[in-house]
Length: 164
Image 1: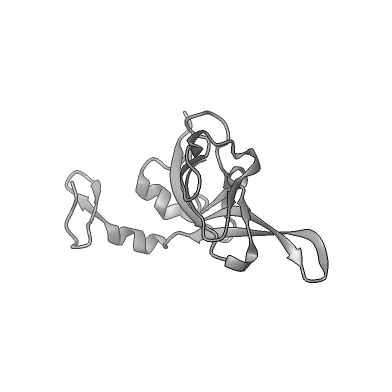
Image 2 (image 1 turned 30 degrees about the vertical axis):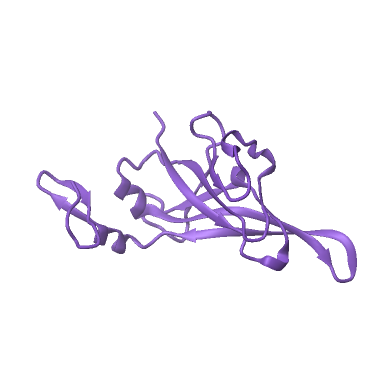
């Protein structure tokens, strides 16, 4: 019985002069600390590609309507200042609770490709980079949870009151 974590990612093309970018959700990766706690040799988890319920989905896109069944084989095109919110699932078999996952999560990486013309050439040049987001350290994760009687955990709101 495999477990998955769902991450909702917000992506935006903020480079007005760079032209369009293509975001490749199907090649997204998640870096997790191993069970031994070694952050220097992370476990790399690949995004779930199969299964209709778990494959990446576009939840919102600035300029297009009806992308919920969007074919992600060719990625998502973002024009300058376009924004998209996407849902991706990653396997995390050893993590049972949200805090287990957050304590081990290091970063998420999404490949981004851009194309444009150079000053000396009329051909399109494709540049590859990654959009990366880093999780807060485990020591900070515990600032957002409180232990209740019976060893239960709950989130703490901004006023440090337990949310039940």
